[in-house]
Image (cartoon, rainbow, N blue to C red):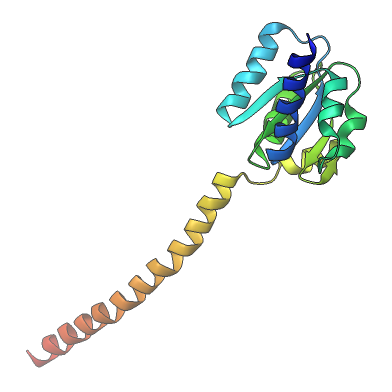
Length: 170
C-alpha cells in the first residue's frame, strides 16, 4: 500500500468515526471468510457496515475525533462495525458474538462517549430508530382514536336512549 492509498484509507476511516452513530471494535482472529461474509450480510440488512483496517491507520484517523478514546481497543486483529443508527451496529455485533466465540467485542464509541463491553451490550438492548419512531407514531395515533371513540359514543348513547323511549311510548 503506497502513501496515497494510506492517506485515502485514513480519510475514509475519519469519515466513519465522525459520521457514525456508533462504532463497535471487536477481535475477529480465527473467523473464516464465510463467517466474515455472514457478518457483513447481517450488517448490511441492519443498515450497518463492517470494516477491517490497519490499527495504525485507524489510530491516525481517530486523532482529534470525538471518539478518540477507543484507540486503546485497536490492538491485534480488529474489525469495526458501524452505523448511523446509534443502535444497529451494536445489535449486529452482539447477535453475531452470541453465535461465534471467535468474534470478541472489545468496546466502542457512541458519539463522544467511549463504551466498554458492557456499554456495547446496553446499547444493543435499546430500541432502534425505527422501533422508536413506530412507538411514537403509536402514541400519537392512540389519542386520536380515543377522541374519535368519545365523539362517536354520545351519538350511539343518544340513539339507544331514543330507541328505548320509543319502545316505551309504543
